[in-house]
Image (cartoon, rainbow, N blue to C red; front, side, top):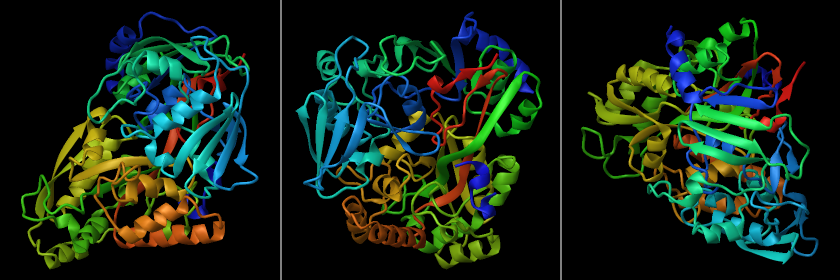
Length: 533
């Protein structure tokens, strides 16, 4: 989907960075087969099942592979599976026919047992991918190139959950004692964090986390040989430094273009900019389930009161954030779901205009006429202008008497706060690789239990809604399923579980002569890069 296909209603410092970037990148120069790729943050880990996070997946997609992929138009494509479908005699079994002649980077043949191992590993307790496989009962290798996945019941959309579930080699994992995924939230280190053995188009030649990763083309890869034979991947957190690196020729592609620099880069000779919508929503969430907040200056939990949550919604000026913070590069929304996703409607997408007077009245009615204090946690290196968005909202909340202490930090520290339930109030972005609402419900809405609710930092719990969410996985009547999705969204919206801000827009900037299309999940593949004469 392109920007113009969305619904009609949705339509200084640069000089400081050169020396630092040159030091970080070294003296390597780019030839026709080398791409120097920079973005705001590094992959959190190379363990393919430890973190369900966009930049981590983006790098790992070059090293590991999935059974099915996702094209830029949203369609499923064959990767390690060449065919897939529901068993003709049992609608609770998914059948995957695997690609033959594939090898791992160490030369080991890829077989069905590796898929069994990887899906079971992805369902382990320490896996951040387990929510995608909550309806799986067992996985069986029928022969060397056929796998059966037994579901709890009919699961017509299960294949949509597999676009970021990577396949590992069982022997390699056992040899290096990484049969279980890294416990990222617990701060665990393992061999798989910095080393990899996938079937992907590139091998890891060098890995220095947060500094530099070098990938080299894997000559025995099964697919067509890409034009890029070497990738030098460099995280550059500072916006001005990242742009300066592109302008000086020290990098070839900048994935996270600061919104304030898009127009300037579009008008700069030798630079091209590709833009498009991302399948990602940015939102705030709050602990509405605990008896007491950890950082508030009042007893009890103000966020548990629906009047307070409504007041906070009325204090959020999404249009001002779009105009001032995002320089027009966002799509304000009233629902935590991008327009790409099954379940999205224009009615859900509508959002209220700010009403500070009414918000103050609601706070007084809730018993907080003088407001209260609380801490807001935000990342500063994950989403476009994430810290600035949070700063803007802090000012808006101050107008209604809520005094917010903003704590801004790198996403490697921010995300564990949410997963470990150690934050009262936070900003988060959520992409939907399945293009279906169930993905949002499983991770963000369902009560925290078992495989589901892994990112439910709001502590929201509704047993009736949990049952409906679980039923989505096995409902074969798509009309009835869509009705359930609508019912769940209606309850989520009524309970103000989230405070949606906007859907994110993307911009990639690159040297003239390089072509790389914008990917809706912001997971560009350097195999898609082409060079123009």
